[in-house]
Figure (cartoon, rainbow, N blue to C red):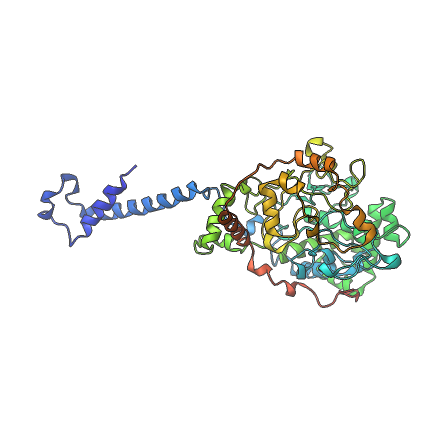
Length: 486
């Protein structure tokens, strides 16, 4: 490698009041007549400085950062079809898609709650209110159970790399199926869906707890109880066809729709996916600006935290890639709260990915979440067990200690005696907690207080400022004229 000291020496000599042959007589022969090589030496200095920067970044684990996020990373981008996005916005917030017309997609993924609901576990069909003020409903309309898993944020789901949806990945891209998606519906899932995000949008409306309602309450709930998903989608499409405003919106969004009978729920799911992908794209955080070349975008604390994130704390092992997720599934000893998913001897456990693959090695594994806007999307974990970002990070640093010393008071859940009695059945069983702990893939990591605070600063630097105020993403009314509030 070209000797850097020689480079600096030669250039300095060149700049001292003009080098001439007389002055050069006392200089070694290889420095004589340096003038013609000035550009060469300046170029070497630039290369050397660049090498210094790269060497320092490599030392701190920053050379592994990927290229910045671009439009090419998304299969749905702004202005692809503005009419479809507008239609999707109304459908996302309209309770017309629920069996009893009392809940919408946005109830659990609201723009005013950063695409979540602020609760550890959602209060689905039958509840009243929005966000942390939502209650469990009253009298015969009250909910039958809590939704078993936390409402995940919707940010960046229009990117190609998000090829699996839900915490257990039960909806995945799979070209071997007619719909191009592997889902619980199998071959019953219709064709024509724009991507895996649209495939995902087909399912909340088929859940009794989330949107469909209980058998006997409405025809959609009855079809769900009979596991007749095509009938659910057919009945919802018929509802939309009866609304003249929706018919016009569908015609504007889809040239192939000429008559109202052409409208299918696939069109609705594609529109919802387009709205989510365009509206909740988030890739302008200080971190994004930093990797696009603005070295001043991150504070000193955030830069130090980034080095810890990709270095000593080993966060980047799973939270890798452009969106800080390897899109894989891992067991991290997350405390189990809520009704569970019907697994285990009691039926109150949640085996996670195993329920999809049938592989016992996948027990207690859940998908690695993206960390964009992570500071906005509490509570954390597949069941919202941790109410603060700090608590979630500390769990990662010592997951075994954390699950065995879990503070149940931190959950964010509306209380109801019959629901409260089962919320901690698993967590109160030392035997079941031990099983979850033994499956953990995380190693204990020690950080100083300063290192911990720097790491938290970096996680806050993953917040896109455009996502902080999402009020304009919420419509003031919807075509069904159903209330946006309870």
